Length: 215
Image: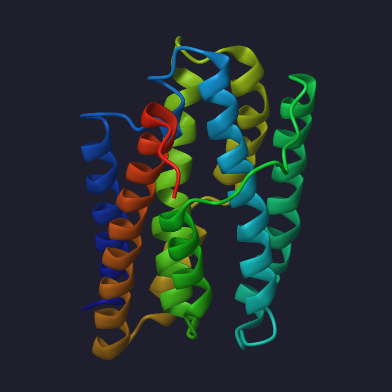
């Protein structure tokens, strides 16, 4: 398949997944939550994600041969830690320790799966395209929702602005580098892997928030 058409197809696949989340928005989105205790739990969970994402992007630098992608990963590493600082400040304003958190099983599995990928196109497809694509969709929904208070949405407005400034960079990487049938088949698989793991992660968050499930 033409690589631009292929990249567009992968973007469309992520968009279809996001549309299914609108049927029952997860606690991760903040939108269904009705009290600050639950919102604090979710923000601690998502603060951990920002740090872990920065660690993963940084770990990929040395093994990424494409200089344009390497530069984007370097910038993303710094940006993820800036996002973590924004959420840490919001939690501190509520008298909370952002680091008083243990990650959920599916959360650990999802990020470990991302970190284990070895090639540029599958890395970019699984994490920046699918993983962060879903996360940024949820951010957009939360900052537009009347049920989410300003102390939550304030840091996410800045985070969303950063994410929007990247445009369709992951898709552009796929269009540029995912040229062969073998590469495209692998990308399809890791996009599906990312979405399956994302759904399991959202389920873990829901059970933790609503049922006080502890693993």
